[in-house]
Amino acid sequence: MDLSSLLVQFVSGLSTATLLFLVASGLTLIFGVGGVFNFAHGSFYMLGAYLAYTFVATVKLNFWVAALAAALGAGILGMLAEALILRRIYGRAEEGGFQILLTYSLILIIDDLVKLTWGTEYKSLSRPPGLGGALVMGDLVLPSYNLAIIGVGLLVVVLAWLVLTRTRPGRIARATALDRETLGLLGINVPLTMTVIFGIATALGGLTGALAAPLRSVTPGAGIEVIIDALIVVVLGGMGNFWGAWLAALLLGEVNAVAVAVAPEWASLFSYLVMVVTLIFKPEGLFAPRQVRKV
Image 1 (tube, helix red, strand yellow):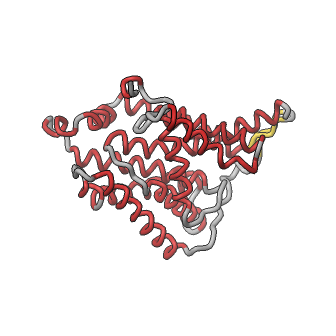
Image 2: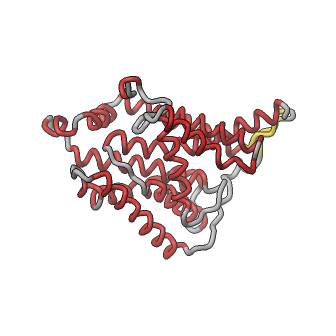
Image 3: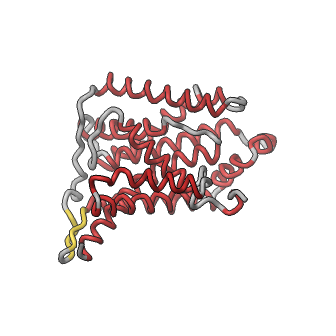
């Protein structure tokens, strides 16, 4: 394999990593702040893809406007799900089991609603105007849309860092992860904070679905596929570790890119092998903060 092919695979891995991170960041944000494992998070990814398709194909919106509208729609639906359903099981001793059963039920409900609304046939969405081609530099040919996805991912990382570390809402979110009761005594509306955080997380899922729609078919059941990959990222990065999810997504994206180039018939197994090895030797996650590692 020559240098240009390696660079193409590297960029492909980065674009895959970006999509994985955008989904996993929402999942790990919910778990890190609220201690809630939202198994239905992938369904909001799927809703984002369908909403983007509708906004572009039916409403005739610009792709990027449609992607933002899809993210907003997924976020609003996520807030409703948290306020009307998930909030009712917070604080129960058997909360974890309830969360898995309840959010899995949401997957089934959302999948059926999607089939009733959009049908069962596959949908397709064209790449945005101006990004259908490739950037050519000598022998190197890089798809323009993949580069745009990488740019969006980097923008989200920078914005997330600024919001979490430099703003009052970010500090409140981090405090919510540490002690909800004390925060409530200080006058912070903790339930509303949880709802907003859930909305931001599901909006990230919806945005990812919209961005991935031009690269993959828009189809029912897509949420199940993406939640498995997102879960691998969360496990590798450390449960609730936002920056760990970023590093894990980069690792997994490049592993997948190399696997596709070297052994395409076995490519799908490499992600699971990485997760299994991690669970055996470092179950707290490869990038877990030092203070949460087991001794």
